[in-house]
Image 1 (cartoon, rainbow, N blue to C red):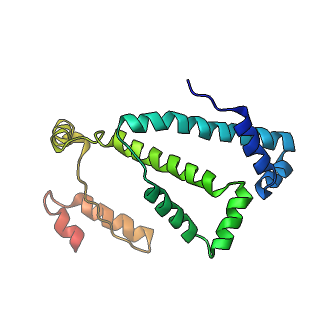
Image 2: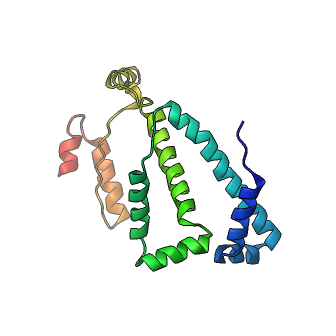
Length: 175
């Protein structure tokens, strides 16, 4: 029931067409294909935002301006300087407002995923019951081996271990 105005998509596309990323995409395929790829990605992001926001509200998941600022500061920390960070934003065709929106969506998605999956883990009682019912699948095996340079010696040692009386194999192996 929500609309994404075509003017918003057009404005975002116009900003994107002025970026180095658009030039790269256009060189890899063609300008029309690059535009379609951007439009699809942009619409996908807009739709995801419109779907996630009401779900987050319903589950009481909120994102504060401080949360967004912290995440943006983390992103900035990955760049040698603020100037290079801003250049990267510009190259992506993003304004600081666009980045804030993207970061907010990302945080909402992370928190929604955590909220939805928080009860998806089995209880200790369920784990114990599963273990008891499937003990045959949980065998412990101990493996030892003897390394030798000559295959003849390896065959001889193997034969001696096979012929050893029951119960003495471990002792003989250790020797």
